[in-house]
Structures are given as C-alpha cells and as structure tokens.
Image (tube, rainbow, N blue to C red):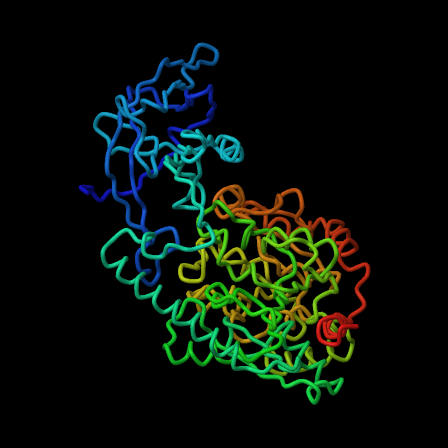
Length: 575
C-alpha cells in the first residue's frame, strides 16, 4: 500500500463543534475565528507506536502515515458577527456516508477532518471539549445481510499536547465473529515482521497452555498450597505483605505451605525457562493471591482446583483501568483477559464493589468488601511514631518542616510509555512558597522512569523521595497531599489532612485516557486546573477540606483494621 509519512498538526483554530445524524447523512459543523478562504478534506491515516527514545513524552512516540484524502465541501457557510464586527465562520457539512468517497463508502480505518489554507501547512481540526464529552452518543451501526455484517462509524480523540484534542472518525466494516473468545494473534499484525513475531508469540502461548495442563494434572491438590504473586515488584508489599504477615502471626504458615513469586515482569523480557518455571509453580497451587495486573493468567485457563484472588493494590482513583476503558485505546479484549479469571476480588469498602465490577468486568457476587489489608494497623500510634523516628533519623534536615507530598499518576497508556510533564511546575514559585515552613517532596509513580531535575539552589526545600520510601509510610510525615487522578488520596483520607488535586490537563485527560467519574465534581478536595490556582490554594490554605471529611465518612465509617483476618477466614478457612 502506498502512503506518505506526515507530521500530526492539530489546531484549535478550526474546531468540530457539532455532529448529528439523519439516517445515512452525517452532519457536522466546523467553527473558526479566522477569515481566510479554506478547503476541507477527510484524511485517511494510521498512527503507530514506535520504540520510545529517552526524554520523549508519551504522546511523542508515534509515527503517522497518510493513505488518502477525500475532499469535502461545506453545504453552507455562515459568517458570525458581533456589533457588525467579524467574529468567525461556521462551515456546515452534510456527508452521505454511503457515498462519502465519490460513490463509495470510506475505507476501513481512521479519518481526520483536514483543513487546507493557501500558503500554509495543512492541519487537522480539533474537537471542542463540549462535543468530545458527547462522542460516545454519536456512533452508528448500520447492519446488513440479516445482521451478519455491519458498517460502523464512531468517533474518538487523542492528544499530542494534553490540551488540543485530535478528532478521529473510525470507519469499519465488521463481520459476525462466532469465535470471539479466541484471539487472532497473527491476523492482528499489520506487517510481515509483525506477523512472524505474532506467530512466534502464538506458538509460545500454546506451549504455555499445554505445559500448564500437564503440570496441573500431575499436581496433587490438598487445599494447603498458597502462592503470593506479583509481576510488578521483586519484593512482597502492600496487601500481599500484610496478609502474609497476619497468617504467620496466627500460626497458619504451619497449616499452609506458602511460597512466593515476586518479580518485575510487566513490560520486560523474560526467558522461556523463567516462564516454564512460573507456569509449573502456578499449576501446583490451591490458592494464588495477586495484587495487580498479571498477564500470564490471560494466556492459560486456570483449573477449577485453583482459586485466584485479586487483592488490588489501590483504593479508589479517577483514571479508568481495565474494562472501565473498554472501547478506548489500550482496553482489554472481551475474552482472554486475566481479570476474567478471578474467583475473589477484595475491595476496600462496599461502595467500591460497583467501581471494581466495572474495572474487572465481573459480576458483583465475586467481590469481598472487607477492607484493605495494608490499612490494618495503619493508624496504630506506635507504628506512626516508630516511622516518624526512623524517617527523621534518615532525614534530619526535614525535622520541624511541614511536608507537601506531590504524588501524581503517570501520563501515557501504559508502563512502556509512562511520563510526566514536569514543565507544568514552576520550581522557583514552589521554592518561594515553601520558605522556612514547608518542604516539597516528589513521589512519582513507579512507571515514570524520568525523575524530576531539581536545580542545586532549590534542594534545601524541594526533594525527590520517589525511590526511597513507601508512599503509605510517607503519609505519617505528610502535612498536605497534592495528587491528580491517582488513588493515593484514598488511604490518605484516614490521616484527616488536606488534599489538593492539580489537574492541568483535566478535560483532555478525561476525554482521552478516560475516568469513571468527574474529577471536578467528585474529588475529595480542591481541584486546581492551573499551577497558579494551586499556589494560591496553598498560600490561602484553601483546601475545601469538607469534601475530604465527607469522603472519609463514606468510605471508612466501618473501618476496623481487621481486613487481613476477614480475607483469611473467608477464603482460606471457609468461615
């Protein structure tokens, strides 16, 4: 196929502000504040991820090719004036979707609304935020041949700069899929090398399944083998750690044979021998406790003799994960996801059952709202004082200071491309605000490889604790938390201290990454969309703390610090 490499150039100078349907006629409006003559087209393109280079933002690691352009002509143009002065133009289009490309439908693929102004580089229309929030309602499915086939038109957005939304029209001819539970690894690849790699991957997966089935049948099951497993850290932590410790305190490590699989495998290459050893250990277990995304369970079908328990590491955040992102970039498949294998999912409260039912794509009967094990003893005075003493011994220069903990989530679709835009922070203003009273501490998401660069002259008031401390322990010495879409605020609410939300890309994040509830409406603290708002909130102590109190009451009114015991009793001891 012939195509040309192009640079993505999206502008808010021309925005698609309205989309509507009347049977096969797609109507849309493009608005601009510019007065020159312009022509328009639909551009057929592809945007593919390439290997990340050091220092690149997540949104920069894509190459783009254009395949074809289809001219489109406005049905009418309206000049907008105010008190006789020119304000802008509105271009109104009506597109017969059955004859959009001369007498043909649009080809399968992604299409953008392109603008051509004489003497300028071609650029792409953006979507207005108001329209983008309604795009899910703009999709259409046109069925034919008794429903065996359909032509689907949908719209979505992505962003290259966390501000401007690139609007995409998705045109797809779809065939009935009677084997939807099976992945088609080879067919999904677009290049010969890709197909070869996928063929190898498919062979490895089939080998894993075959080896698991043999090993599982050869493994006797007496109900006493437990494995604590994480694929994101080489050590036991969080809920897994506290369940393990509580079992030992109760002497249950003598009744059960406990083993551990602790490695950082998500997004990294592991040898065939490593995978074979892991599969063998999985096949031997009666119970497997996991705390995060574990992709291996998407490739094998666990025996009914093994129970898989998800004790998810997070409380509640805003960003969409798992099936709450279904239909967006990076969403899981309808079948073959590890999330579909859980026999039990532990949640922090009854209110979170509905949230995680959406995340994991499971009916609510599989959930145990017994609390988070890692919060057992979280408020114990001796634990708090012990950590404070240890912390200030290691950081004597911080004693007597009020710590502001800055702990945002990452940007990008996954671990491989995770970044954060430190350019959204003015370190000079932070330094001036801190004065002799405060210290600003970065605690970046572990996926973010590039850590903040702090000039030497600021290091007495701005520090980086990203790799040195457990974030939950840091809450004991934190005066104010600043986060965004992360779930970090969930446990912090128990400390009865203020939270601020710095969401410089809020609307763009909601419309591209996706959230399961409105940040502005539901955040348990003040939401600041600009850095200046954040600094002013800090200066004025304007935290909207009443929201934090309301959140704590809703989620921790029944908190008793005995979650680990409840998990052990319900799942292992069948009480």
